Length: 463
Ligand code: ARG
Image 1 (tube, helix red, strand yellow):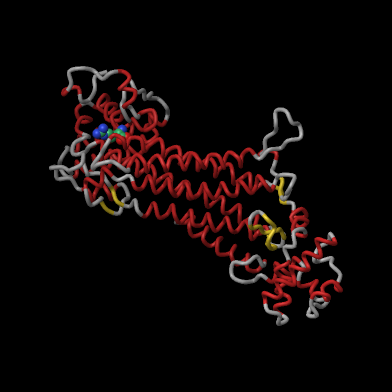
Image 2 (cartoon, helix red, strand yellow; image 1 turned 45 degrees about the vertical axis):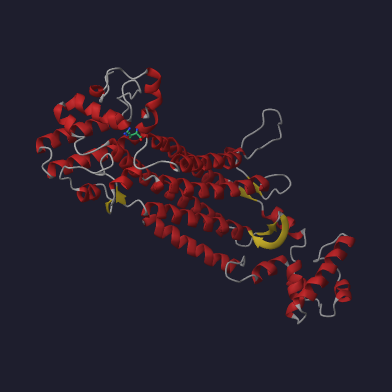
C-alpha cells in the first residue's frame, strides 16, 4: 500500500517497521473525536474562504458517512492499510469524495490533530468517570444512612482503638471520593484550551480562525502557543495521577472488605453474585473482586509512571514517543471505569453484620479513653486519669474481663472519683454518641456529614 508521503521516498516501508510505527490498533477508539475535529476544522476553513462551501459540504457528508460506517463496524481498520486513525479517516474520505477529501488537511497537521483528539477523548471520559464516582458515593451514603448506630471498633495499627460506627467509617471514603471528583474536575478545568490550529508546531500561513474551531469544539479559547499546543501532555499525566489516587482509595477500601469478610472479622458478607469459589476448597467464598481492584491499582500507577517517564526528556515540540501516551491513558481509563462499575453494586449488595461488629467492639478496651475522660471530667488531670485507666485495663486482663464488667470495687480501689455512673460513661453507645465534635462518629454528626455529601453529589451531578 502506497503511503501518503510516498513522494519523498524511493522504497516502501519495511513490514516490521510498518507494524511498529502504526497506532491504528489502539487509536481507532478515537474515531468519533477525530471526525468531530475534522468537521469543525472544515467548517472553519470554508468560513475563512480557505476551501469552498461546496468542498465543505462534500467533506461533511463524507465524514458523517464514515462515522456511521465505523459505528456500525462496517470498516476494518488494519495496520497494513492505515497508520493511525487520522490518516485512516482522511484516506477513507478521499476514496469516497475525491479531491475535496484531499483538501481537508489544509492548515492542519496530525500533531495538532492528535493533540485535539486526545483532549476530546479524555474530556469525555473524565466526565464518565466522574459520574461513576458519584454513583459509588451514592451507594456509600445509602449504606451509611442505614448504619448510623452500627457500632464497630475503629482501628489504628489494625489494633482496636476507639468506638466508631460503620456509617462514620464509610463516610470517610465518601469524603475521599469527593476529592476525587474535585480532582477530575480540576483536570477538566486545565483542559479548556484548544490545540487545533497549532499546525505541525509553528502555526500556519493560512488565515485560520482558531477562536472559531475552539468555540465549535466547546473549548474556552485556543491554546496560546503553538509549540505548547502540540507538545503538551500534562492533561494525560494529570488524569492518570487523579485516577491513581482514586484507585488508591478503592484499593484501601478493597483491602478492608477483604478483611471484613474473613472469618476473623465477619463484619460483612458479600453477595454470592460478587464472590467466587475455590476449585479445591468447597467451603471457600472469596472476595476476588476486591483483590483484583487492589491489584489493578498497580496497573494505573504503571500508566502514570510510564507517561511521566515518556515525557521527561522530550525536546519541543512533537516527538513520536508521544504516541505511547494512548495505551497508558486508555488502559488507566478502562481500568478505573471497570473497577467502579463492579465495586458499586458489590458494595450495595453486601450484608452488614452489626452483631459481629458490636462483639468486636466489646473486645479490645476501646472505651479506655472514655474511662480516662470520665475521671478527667471529675477534675483528675488527664495524665493521671490515663495512668489509672491503664492500671484498670491491666486488672481486666488479669481477671479476663472487660471494663464494662469490672466490679465497681475495683474502680474505687484505683480512684475515689469513680461512681456507678462510670458504666454509663463507658457504654459504647454513649462513647459514640458523645463524640459530637466536628467530624466525629456521633450519629447526628455523621448525619450532618451525609447531608453535606448528598448536596455535593446533587450539585456535581448537574455540573
Ligand atoms: N499517531 C500519532 C500519535 O499518536 C499521530 C501524530 C503523528 N505525527 C507525526 N508527525 N508522526 O502521536
